[in-house]
Every structure is written in C-alpha cells, then in structure tokens.
Image (cartoon, one colour):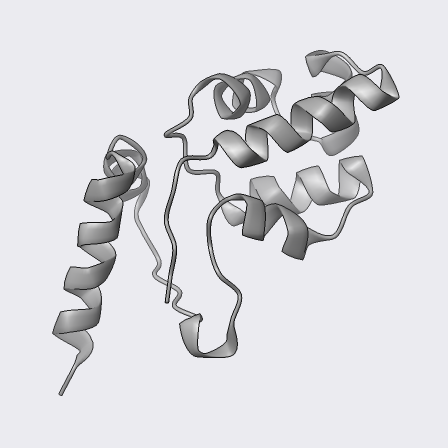
Length: 116
C-alpha cells in the first residue's frame, strides 16, 4: 500500500538533524546543494511534496540514507508498492497543493485505472 501523508515527519526529522549539527537553514541548504527557499518550504509547509532529486540532495548533504528520507516523506518502499509517475511541473504543483486525503484519493484512482 502507498501511504501519502503530511511531510511534517520529514520536516521534524530534518529540523532535529539541523539542531544536532547546529546548522542554520542556509547551511543545510548549501551543504545539500538546494536553494534555501526549497528547504524553507519543505520545513514550513506540511503539504509540500519534495521531488526525488531534492530528497537525494538532502540525503547527501545530511549524510543519511535516501531510503530514510523517502519513508519519512510518507512513501512506502515495499516491493509491491513501487509506483513511479512522471509529472509535469504543473501536475507536481497541483499534487503538492492537495491535502493528504486528496492525494490518497488520486493514488487510489490511479490504482483503479491500472486494473485490467
């Protein structure tokens, strides 16, 4: 099952890691190679859905496994749950603007449409 939820778990984790390292948002963003505005949005907007490349950059910058950040983002990595959808920037923004319940409904709709 794919679980889509608020990004607050990811934000909480990143904030704890930043505090332990005594990093500012600017330093964390610089070490990760992402814009500070991207990190700020991720930390302050619980409905923000990060792109995979952002999670990859954060994993490198923080020295943590990418799998951990993906799971904290609310996505399961179970073998039967792997679903990848390529979204346009407009579609990504629309998905990011949805509530967690709306995202779950979209995922369920996609599953229904994929059934033979």
